[in-house]
Image (cartoon, rainbow, N blue to C red; front, side):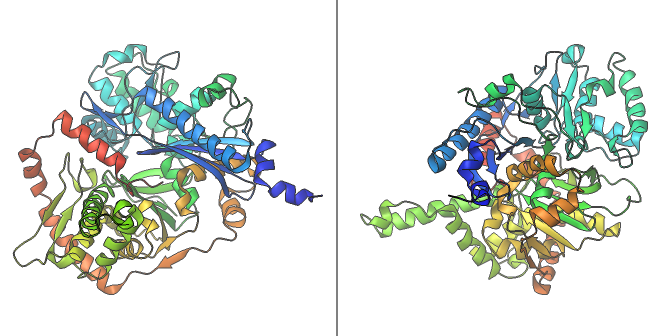
Length: 569
């Protein structure tokens, strides 16, 4: 007979007994579901690709796409479970939902959307963000939910007459699964500023914001609109019968599983890299790119380049968020992959190699990034920008990807790719400079994202760009769905501080690999960055010369969603 320990470690038995933990994350290009066992190992997964659309000048995901995408990702996970273990899951130990932070989902009294979901990518909230930042003496980014709400108030949008609640994407999904209008504190910190002592919305700032709103819309009760704030480890409701059928229309899934507080992708990235203690931080490289550094003390003053958000436990974090990440690099990888495919077909016509088609994405990235490592430290005088949309950190309302070079610059494959990688990291480095001016200490940054599947080059070049050791945890590739599953598992260990739970239990056997900044690479990046700064004014001319049509924007959104390596997952 099998021992009890052996039975407990059997994934099939664990799933059959309803003791696996489910995590679901809505990323910018992919919805992913994963199951973890009691040792936090992924035992099944499923995913669904999706893309944002530009509708009436705003970036959004269709409401139907949210639910059909979730169901498809979950069905793919169930299919994986059946293929591996010949079991159909019917219950879980716990469930967690995570999604892209920020944005605006306005709900009526029945919980239905009043306007299409406005994502973090929208930058139309300038007047509101400026007024709020001044009144609160706190930097309110364009992406934050309160900026979207106040902009709707300033614009006297008709939907405000029926407004009963606002939330984030994770909060919206969680509400439909459980009936609870709540957020984890990390996700809530991108809705409205959090008081680090109460780990709830800042009461003083709420009063100020309420007065601003009341000047234009006196009927709105700001506090009444916002989700309740919960910390990691607090139960946030249970899967309802309606929620179970929404997630699994087949009817196999039964209600009753507890859910952890819904969190944002920034928080789950911190969990996935064990970067929630002071002097730690992480960098997520995907469609966007952002760095999170856990603070030991408050900053001296507000900085427009920095968001002050929190960990899932409520500790203050400085966040540098850039709208544009690895998508442009992925586009170049696609071009060179197509060239490799054409070359293979032209030189090996009729052979098995030709019939097999293009190189796979990992091989393309490995080839290109190896060339970048062998390139000149400053990319040979080339300049590359990755601005597919506006970039607040760089002071840009809109942008265009560009490759620039003077007559003395040396255009080689390696220099071109190194310039693209540096261009993807450059805006982030501008924001991180502000943390340096504030004398914020960080010992190591943990990186995650699809581009780091290629070992060595991205890690080394990011270390050069940020002048900080960059570590890759062996769990980083699991992504946010794994991170929120870990937070769901934490419901059974909430008596232990989250940082201790991660270090002593989840990551006890982890062996991250760390790379120190190389002096030559660092000096080369600084020369590249100087050219990059001088070239930023060209963006205004490029935008004026190439106005974006709706068709262009839809094509751009599709490219962002389909380029491999562009998503942190």
